[in-house]
Image (tube, rainbow, N blue to C red; front, side, top):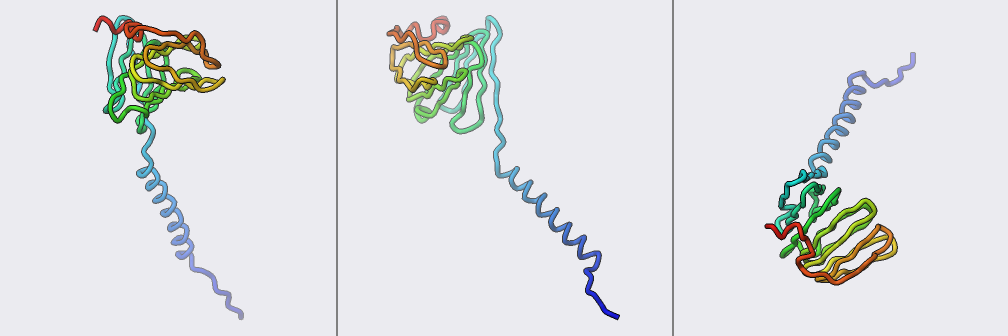
Length: 173
């Protein structure tokens, strides 16, 4: 009679249990290591204005009937969903802020500026410093006391403006 070595049944359960425990442990470990992305939504109703702190050196003032989404990443990623927003970036926050308006990307380079979102694009008005606007046709720098309109494809109507024109709805503050 020949004897063939067969693994005992408890060894199979032990092996499968060890594999399952390792997979479960790695899953929990990846969940604890990776910081989940969280988005904060700030919005105002008609007649309401609010100022929020997106990061220690970045404040956002929202006009009436406006909304922004702010990620918990460092630096925060911000998307203007509707309306008007004024961004005040100071100190170490300068050069880190990115604002998305439709398909247009606006990167701050140390400044105060406002953005208006419209159905077919928007407007950027810079009070201090400068911003970089990336549209489909290229990247443009907009300096202090300048305003531009954009449609996602190109920059239109670049003009000089007064500081009061940057966020006229804030003049009542």
